[in-house]
Length: 111
Image 1 (cartoon, helix red, strand yellow):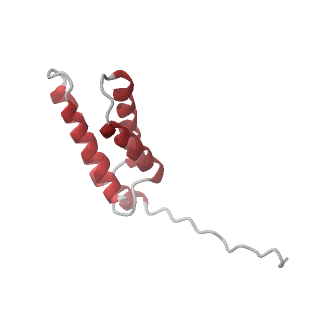
Image 2 (cartoon, rainbow, N blue to C red):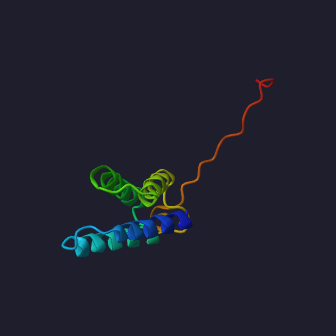
Image 3 (tube, rainbow, N blue to C red):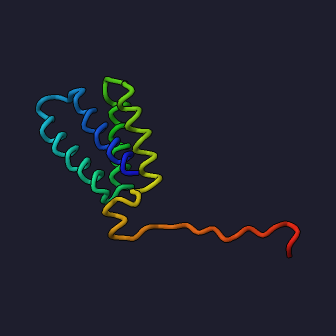
């Protein structure tokens, strides 16, 4: 999960290298740094990765470029939003680990 969070954060920063208009670049870069930092430490991971996914989809739909980096960002951020932050995150320290325990299965022959 840590590697997936790092991958999404790095891909987000690399996708800015494609270049928005120069007047918007400092604002977009500051926002991307804030989101990347949140992903790296694992705070509000499902929410932040959903925001990253929405921005990447908007860039694919509205932007004039279609590349594998944005598609990778969309897919990885969806996976991260669905899986959660993982054990090595601030979310796990604040809210505790979520462990699902399955009860033993009853055999068909037993009643």
